[in-house]
Image (tube, rainbow, N blue to C red; front, side):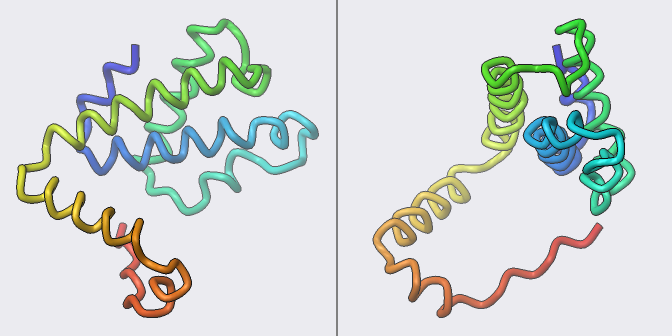
Length: 131
């Protein structure tokens, strides 16, 4: 299940899972009206590869559940969000070297100790990821 996530780059997997989670989390607004928040709007800022992978994840969930994803209840949604999220997290973590992991742990420790307001205004803004 979701084995296709291992056939794409880590960046594509992260993006595809992010957009699939976005669709799943907003399933009620997609379900409420046919002209409500559409899938196209929710995927508007995705790359073509991320969009394709997100929709492939959704189709796999629908195949497994034998229901449209918009009909899934909260426990089922959480199951799939956790499952695909864990798969990508495990993959990305396995690709990191010890130095990167330790640097990330130090950064997290700093963030946990920092005053969130000072941190928010004292850091340089992050550059937007190019697509």
